[in-house]
Length: 191
Image 1 (cartoon, helix red, strand yellow):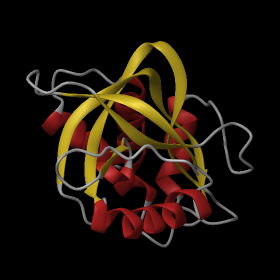
Image 2 (cartoon, helix red, strand yellow):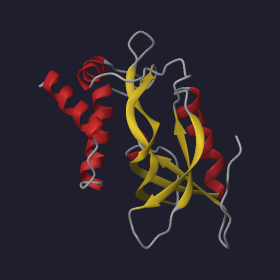
Image 3 (spheres, one colour):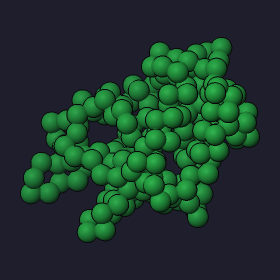
Image 4 (cartoon, helix red, strand yellow):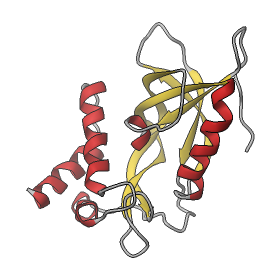
């Protein structure tokens, strides 16, 4: 994997963009974080998870990004510096690539704060050629799957609710119809 490492008068650093569980549980050391968005992608619950939020018999549903030129996806970018970079990338490659089947890509990240310019960030994306990629389904069908799945990290519902909570707390002006329609359908099943 070839990475762009930004070098300034300070130590070299790399920005990593999270749009799923990384927004509330990065589990790696970082220097600082910024809420913001990337353009050209929609967040979708189209990826299967047979480790963290499901198992091989009942894979959970987690988010990936799909190309959508008119969309943007909000999340958090984390800056990892020289000493944190190797450890963070090793951890994320196991969590996202080995266990999750995601590939990496460099994207342009725009921080919420208008005084900061955009920057390049590494992002993990599950593509349709991944064996555990589940693809599109109705919000009701996705909700039914999320409601019954559990993996080594916890229940699939927790993943959904924490992501929705992040969006309401940090991006209240953003409408994520896909996310919120699945949340509503899931809550209707379990309440």
